[in-house]
Every structure is written in structure tokens, then in C-alpha cells.
Length: 187
Image (cartoon, rainbow, N blue to C red):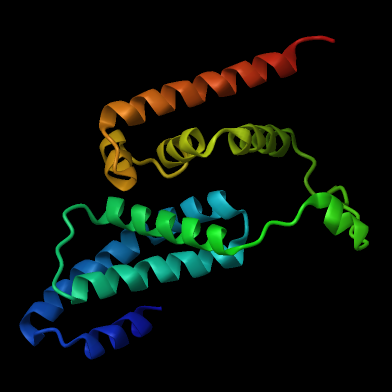
């Protein structure tokens, strides 16, 4: 992917002196944040290949933006915002199909018996609970606890105030607690 990005640089017409520093800072950002951006994309779409594509697209768009002479103050937040926008764009393009329609065509869901450890089921339960939350709560929780972003970085990535991020995080975690408490109650 790095070589593909450098090809964009050559066609963008950057001044040679500026391009070296820009290229080095961009590659450092790639090395530092690509895994976290991948996790963010993966937990939004739950498809490994699509997540890889979205990460690549986010870095390509960021490189193009930078090569056009634009400045980015917080690269990490910018990359998260770019990746999030790509995911939103793709979800708008995609036509959703209901499970009933898929099952009518012959698909029968199968139970996955591979993982049998308690940790797997606990993590799966937590991810299902988080996945069931509204997107505005789900995103801040994933960014905070999976990607280890600061509240300030989340606020920049979502174009929200830090206070709004705190409120969303608190409300989202409270909803998770409520769901867990309901599941733990005897029938």
C-alpha cells in the first residue's frame, strides 16, 4: 500500500523539498495508526476484507488531501473521521437484505462450535451488547475502549465537543449496564 500512495504523490505535483517531510510524517502515521484504524473499521462492519479496503481508502484519501497542500493538525483524529465517512458512504450505497429474504433463498444460519472458552463467550456477549446500541453510543465506546483514543481525539474525529463525547460515553455505558442487569435477572 505504501508504494501505491507514493504513486499518488508523483501525480499530485508536490514540491520535492516539501514532499520528503510530508512523506515521512505520513508513513509514520501509517505505521502508528493503521492497526487501530483497521480495528475501528472492523468493529463497524464486522468484515475483515471490507475493513482492510476501508483502511486503504482512508489512507489514500488522506494522502491525496495532504498532497494537495492541505494541513492536518491531528492526524489520528483525521484518519478516524475519514474512515468513518467512508464506512457511512459505503453503507448508504449498500442495499440491505433482511434475514427472512436470505433464508427464503436457502441460507440457514449455522452455529459456530469452534471457540469454547469462557472468555470468547463473554467477549462475544459484550460485543453483541455494544453492537445493539445506537450508533452514536457504539462509536464512542469502541473508539475509547477498543482503539484507546482520548476523549479529545474522539471529539475531533466526530466533530463534536468533548462534553458531548463524555455524555454519549456515559449514556452508552449506562445502557450496557442496563442490558447486562436485565440478562442477569432470573426469569
